[in-house]
Length: 407
Image (cartoon, rainbow, N blue to C red; front, top):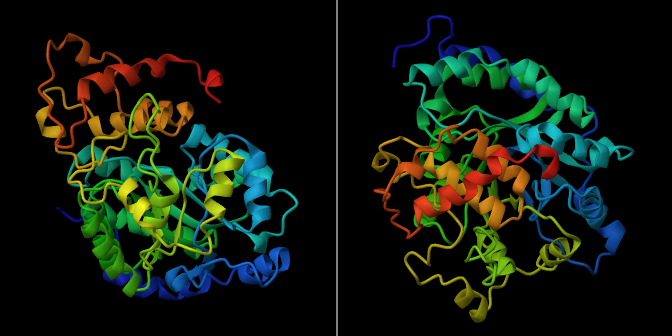
């Protein structure tokens, strides 16, 4: 890949910027000890497992909360119960989730919570001219200020570039420089990458970049390459990166009809039994789900029954609603549809019951004229047994539903 002449050599850039990186974390209002907060609320007899988020120094409960619902009371209850870290994103509900989180945070001390947000660049490699131009010319500062405004904050604790699926993108100089400048400016305390495709390669690249502080990656019991992901997480943790897991519930249900639920408590414990995972951000949409997650905070022991529920000895353990994002389908489709993202939106709708998020993902990945309807039979074969055409034509219907009906 030809180097962009407008961008400094990464080595020189990092050398010149190291002082800025070091000083950026010294934002007033360092996080109060979450253990002290927990003990104050529940007493020393109540156990809660905390882990340090790599070199960030943040000490977090092993369970955080992701974008699962539009009910402010769930997030308020989570914060009151001792959960400290909330993950949001500019692309959740087209920014409305950030606004919701901002409303939840009003009146709370800034040092009592940790906020992460992200901007989605999407799939691709800088070797592709269109993707490189998008990375280079993206109005990051403007978009980032929009996030701060919606959150009502002067800075966030963690900022990710999300949807990244290649080593080249992680190491792309314009990408690195834009991220590092936000940190130097005190707009974010830490920077990271977020991925749910090609995770081992992305995590490895984040380590090699020597710039990022945190990696947010998919990890669950249903991934065919779960051990590869865990091995790279271990390498990243050893290098000092904070490791946060997402997609831990693996679709929540085994079936579209929602008659066979995944044992989500067992799924979450399976992820967190890996001590290289410092916290997880499961989507929590109800108070019952919140209580279920809180119930494992102090004990991650997996019973034999729970192990059986996860079908850990099955390879693969059934199709389920979770798409492994292996991307083997892409080269099979003559229309070059972004099948992994479309199937992921199917999971959001039928598994997580999150139609708004499903529609957001779908609008970014499906053409106006879907060619699947004209195919007599689909030539794409999923190695995990997902019926590709059936799911695509099913989920495509929600693209035209007005957004206000899905909030």
